Image (cartoon, rainbow, N blue to C red; front, side):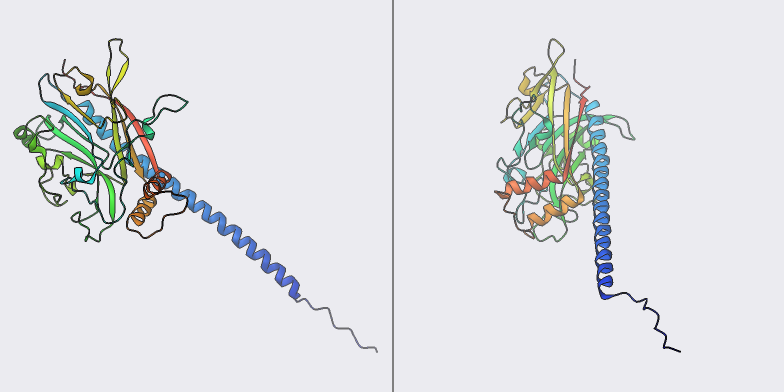
Length: 338
């Protein structure tokens, strides 16, 4: 009998193994890319949802305050709006003006009336309201357990550590946030109904603690307590004001021009520059948490400026605009005196 030939081997050749490895790696890379894209999309969706919820909370409260705003035919200032665009002007507002790069001052964050484009008039979504956004103060009948009595309310954007005092040695993360101070009825009565009165000023830059009961005093109009925090990661906040003309059409009274940074509404004034508005367009710009973390890294010098940005100011706003969303609402101001 002749010898039998051995059966053919079932093992893979080296070439087959290499081809299988390449295919496996390609599939793994494709799955990784798909998973990464899905996670990025999920993070963006979550950020947009968080921003939308925050904006609704802010705009609902602003709308409620405007609906209950008060004005009387006298010489007092019942509503005031100021844009503060220099660090010196933010002294005693509880602001941290350092360390490192911060929101650009001196016009880099100032565009209260954007240049009109070919599509129509200036757009509020493109406006910028200085370092602290619009510092808005008004008198409203803020509902409380002891009844709806006149209350001074203030809104402003503040840059400070999330805990502790606004000093450079504080290691806590630094954030831009929107604060709403509602002064107590009794403090409003004793300080008066002129929102620019000296009783509503602060004499130091240290905010009261979030655990303190001193968060509804006159000084909180200028220097909000940590307990007055309304929304985190808000980098801009502003308003345009209007009145109805004789034909019933809306006429903008603030800003009246690109350099109009102040509107103090006096009760008995009929001049546009100091008239109490009847309608307001309210804007709020909210960063995602990813954007807020990146802005903090920029301001503390942990990341270098890319060559695509010509200046620190451009870099700051490029990052903010890429990681933020703007929300706008038109509200009626109903408390105008007849």
